Image (cartoon, rainbow, N blue to C red; front, side, top):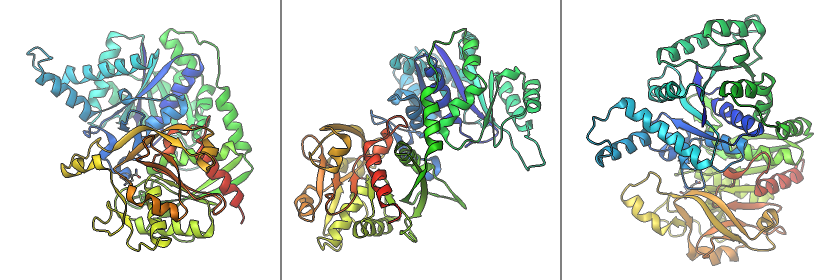
Length: 536
Ligand code: GLN
């Protein structure tokens, strides 16, 4: 087993996850079986209870694990389906160690933060790699070097490297500030980051130098000299237009050659052809398509964060590029809406609670009446059905019981198996989560997109279409084109093509399974309809 640890220096948000995913994709392209793990320093047991504006989108795996959005990057870049074994948090590691202690697993020993916590971390990495049959595991350590929170994970790197010096590589993704045009890239913060790592007993083997511009020779020499690494081990990582260009960019500095050399491995054949092709496609796209996303998880102080909907954004890109179009994605604040006319298509993504709900319903009504392509994801489907109930069936107070418990028309209601969880306030990891099958109805938009009968998609919700309203909704023109195999749960709703060019919504999250090399068929149909609406 070989291990590539990826840690961040200087500051967060410089693309450590995408760097880890790219390293995975590159080593995979060199013919190795890889897997990728994320370690989150939070005490939260998983990402499920975190607000997206705190932590970004909550990604969901097939097995129902609610995890960090970086696992989405790994899946999209490496093209694998990961499991809960690929994700850990401080909270989950401690939980396991404490449970083991209670079961006398440690044989009466004093259980200590070191070595027992790092040993559990190493165990988990090995287990995940074995499960995936991987030869190389990429492990991203969340947070930034110098933070108190991730020290025990760096200690795991130290312990593993001590025993297996030839099998462990530590890559530092560090940021080089560039203050103005007359200035130069600054390496000092990176030097501090390396010294901090050194104080923890580890030394990076590779430094990925993130900056707005490429690293020049002078800075390469400086980093090499001051940070104690070979010049060849400085990988230039300038800003790029598309994240899918990053693997090709890293390879310009021969990152795979450097990594494999350290491991004493020879590259097997294969190369990054599919990423090159994808890059060309994104650059050649001539048309544009303007997609509005109605959401509420943007605000962080005075800033707008798109991270909360990262998989939706990526899925839009995958489908747009596959149709030869450049996507222009804009945020529509659910609380203020603004001018909706400028969009070729509108997405109402997932969400929770009552804030922004009325605005989203207004946006859906606009799409339905003005025949603007509409794509609803999870809450987006629930709200579309509420909109239709209110304005076509005349149930003025129609709502979900998530927002109004006392509504006379609970078109969306709690899943029966969820009632006990809510009553007990048992909120962590208890939603309807992960992959569930659905069957599609022939001659529908959904069937035309998937071109097959049975599908499997990822879920994350507590509420569902109330079975008592299904026939009324059908009378109002709604087609439930996807259902759970037992017919109990409505999975996809749509309006027939003859009444609307594209009005479709899903109870599941199709965005979680889109990939640049195989865009999600429903997103592709939505973008196709939006392109047709372009300029109308
Ligand atoms: N809040 C809704 C529910 O729990 C929708 C969830 C979502 O959009 N992910 O059912």
